Amino acid sequence: MQTSQPPMPRYLKEDELSQECTTLLSTLPAERGWVCSAFYNYQGFWHNARQLQGVLSCQKHFQAQDTDILLVTTPKSGTTWLKAILFTLVNRIRFPPTQDDHPLLSNNPHMLVPFLELKLYVEDESPDLSSFVSPRLFSTHLPYVSLPKSVHDSQCKLVYLCRNPKDTFISLWAFTNKLRLQEMGTNSLEQVFDKFCKGVSLYGPFWDHMLGYWQESLKNPEKIYFLTYEEMKEQPSLHLRKLADFLGCPFSSKEEEENVVESILKICSFDNLSNLKVNKEGKLPSGENNSAFFRKGEVGDWKNYLTTEMVERLEKICEEKLHGLGLKF
Ligand code: PAP
Image 1 (tube, rainbow, N blue to C red):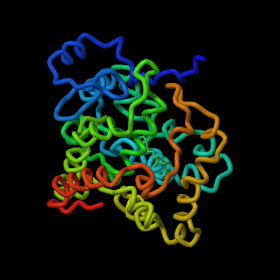
Image 2: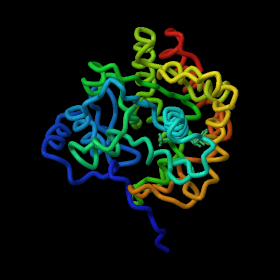
Image 3: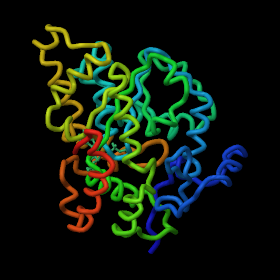
């Protein structure tokens, strides 16, 4: 029996590439992919073809403004959650978080904070961003070395989020199995794990992604706020207040009295968002089910999937690549 496949998101397509992208791809190191047929290494990180076209357009055309806020994440590190939080935080005067018709109640967070290279610049080489109100909120998975020049040249702020690689891997494996091309068959956990550990993964190697932002956040803490999923889970109020300070919109004493911090965390919570009709039944215009972005939302789910050998291998990589620099999970 033929099972029905959701339409493939545009960033996973491998046709309709620009001449510039096709020419570039022919010069790049390539590896067999596990979502698309191939990954290409561009500026030290792995991308699939169509997504790379979005990267090139974004690098060429995106003009950051001083007031912009960019959420940068490694895939499956809690992007959806942080999109919800940042949107609610910076728009809390326009849309009080307790409001019955708050936009989050009827829109998936990915619709409120669009991806640059995976959405805006993959659909249009130079999209019209004039309808975005200030402060404009965008998101990206781009590594630090690949950010558009205007991001460095402007005063815009970056919030960086990453996650324990063991949980990130399981979340990514589960998610990509839902998106995979039918003709590519099933990816075993072992095969994909091996690629992940070699860095051959969407926007991998994960350690270089993290290190790029970690080092820059130490040099320039006014520009980059570095956060992990686990920290946010453990002390959400603390980090929400710190984010508000970092973004120049601290909570007033009146807001503290009115428990605005708690209201924001409540509306953005996994329980609330995952149970909304829009996230249970809705789809993104690209075809992904909104529900795919809400799986378990827990710390430590890797224990249910990874063998002792896998854990040792990944922990060794983290130890070697990340610990010397003070970055711990
Ligand atoms: P993306 O990179 O495709 O945008 P992203 O949102 O970063 O995905 O990651 C999804 C993970 O965040 C899922 O983790 P899991 O697979 O381990 O369950 C998802 O459940 C989790 N997540 C989504 N929303 C929330 C939330 N409100 N609170 C906590 N975790 C969440």
